[in-house]
Image (cartoon, rainbow, N blue to C red; front, side, top):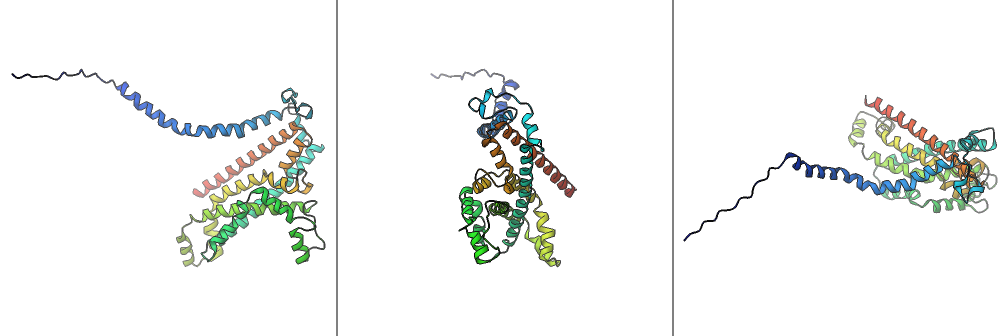
Length: 329
């Protein structure tokens, strides 16, 4: 006896085109949202660390926030644009001191950026040739950049001491370049002391960036230029500097912003009260806020400084982008 079994067929349900698209769309949304989810922690930290204090500072700049309201900042009366008018009134002592500090900072920043770029670029170009000990020299050049700022500047404070500092020992006792030991941390020489420390600390960064940029210049360009009879100076002017233009545009902007905003170097070098010739605007705002306890005026000065740097950065980027477009055409 034989039995036959027939498989029972399940009814096939028709799949609608919309149902097939749903899982596909969900996967696409997940893939698209993954980068934003990964960036979310950094975005939250950025808001907490930078943007929130910035907004609080802007609010403070519109308040009459003096020592009488430190215990309860919310009870400080609104002053409108009073703090800004006080800061830019250059006939009044507060505005005059801020203008002097601003001009000192501009001069200091320009000199420091130019010197850092010149020394860093020259060192990077010379280090392109292969010779024994090149790696060791490159490592030594980066030591000032790798050292902690406070340790390095405190060492310079000892070197700039009047009675037993190394600088006076070399310049006065050994080389006899000065009639008497100089004061470096007070008076007019404080500007040069600050500039020296800033350049010493900043040029290794320029050296590092330019060295990285030089690695992208093909060696065939120099070989072809040498065959055409171009000397070292012509190769530098016609090949090296034009090829480094994009790198230098970013480098100069970063050096400018870092130097203009530098607070650690003058604060560690001179303490809370910087000498007048070295009164950088960052330390000046600190003194206006924490020495006179007028946080409203100090916040207004900070906002003005922020606006100035934004304008300079925007103008610089506009000029450099126009120059790049002209070169490409």
